[in-house]
Amino acid sequence: MNILRATATVGSLTLLSRVTGFARDALIAGLLGAGAAADAFFVAFKLANLLRRLFAEGAFNAGFVPLFARTLEAEGREGAKRVAEEAFSLMATILLFVVFAAELAMPWLVRALATGFDPEGERYALAVALSRITFPYLLLISLAALVSGVLNGLGRFAAAAFAPVLLNLTLITALLLSAFLFGMPAQLLAWGVLGAGVLQLALVLRAAARAGMRLRLRWPRVTPRMRRLFELVLPGALGAGVYQLNLVVDTWFASHLPRGAISYLFYADRLNQLPLGAVGVALGTALLPALARELRGGRRESALVLQNRAIEIGMLFTLPAAAALIAVGEPIVRGLFERGAFDAAATRATAGALAAFAIGLPAYVLIKVLAPAFFAREDTATPAKIAAVCLILNVLLVLALIGPLAHVGIALATGLSNWANAGLLAWILWRRDALAPDRELGGRLLRMAVAALLMGGVLTLLVRFGAALHPLLLLGLILPTGVVTFFAAAQLLGAVDLRRLGAALRQPQA
Image (cartoon, rainbow, N blue to C red; front, side, top):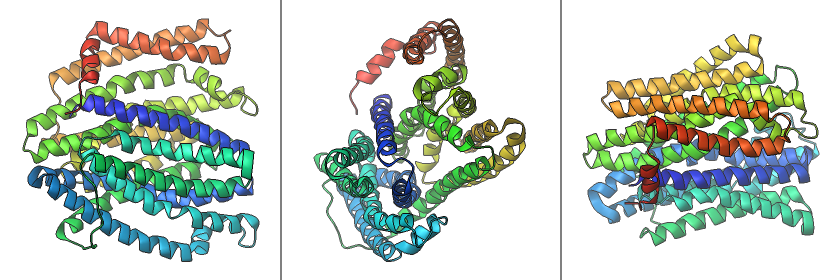
């Protein structure tokens, strides 16, 4: 498998998803504002989305892809297809009961999620109605995640990576229909969520069929392999739950700071998520099936080399992104957000949080690269335990930093706890002989760091001498200048060979 090309495929489509997500959010803000209908829709969407994040995405793929890869290696495509069909049928049955029960219990679920809503008020009634429309999305997107795991296991990444874009485009279409034809934006958005789930599932099922994996429903049975699958998925879901709890903890602390702190962290995190999704998530998605195949085929040395090259690729794109966000975060925030109610003070406050988040950006990408080494060995429990330890560390760091640094302390605590998480993952892998950094990796990482520092210096000078330029024009100069400077420096220092990189991107998937 060409991991660089796979990462580029997933990364570019993930970036497209983030961009269309920005457009979707801007339209929602314009049509719904921050009133009762907006509150009701966000509660309805969050309810299904929360369970999707816990079970349907990373947690399920972490357990399913290695099991699928092992079966593919040992029993061929027919055996792997049988495993996928068993999992599909069992998951569909379980989730049908979950959705049915949730529809009946929706008034109580909404009250639990939105305790501040008056049960006799407009927001509560609308939230219940919208949640009943959106909740079946959980069934559809969970099944889509399973089929995406099949595609990833086969080395096919494009359809699964495009599925979130399809959600954003569907919601944008619903908003435009509301604006120009029908009105009722909250209701149309809710139906758009359900329609997007249908389209996403249809997209990945069609891609699987074209890849020779036309899945059919079987009679659901709890076989030994299905028991093993759920043994792998549950620790991953607990780890995802720890991450969601981390977000709640950070928000709780920020709510005790002066007004604006939560918003500063939200906007800074949105910018930080762009390189995280385009590099970290993409690399982890591409690496897991490749590692699982190598290990199931008994090719341990090849797996170790693959891990090293994945770290290299991750840092090649993450180190310059982190350096740019730290060095010139303020003009980036100014160009994107400073207009209307978002003033210069908000820009400075958001840029401070962005720089603190960016300190942990390379660590977060390392987590996404190192965790698949555990998942590929069918160990989903260790990363979950490490995540729990780092949650406690994050709380302690926030308590220590929030006093002197306010909201920036919360962001810095997140960055530092990410480094602790990455360090623990690496140390345990090294102790288990599952990580063996070679001299080539160490030398290239050092040269990449130097190239990133040089790029940061050039961007700082650009901002200083271009202070009189319009913020959008300056923002338009920052990106190309940073890219050219970093890769030119990296080429001269020997951190990367651009010709080899281009050839690797052109090489077809194995």
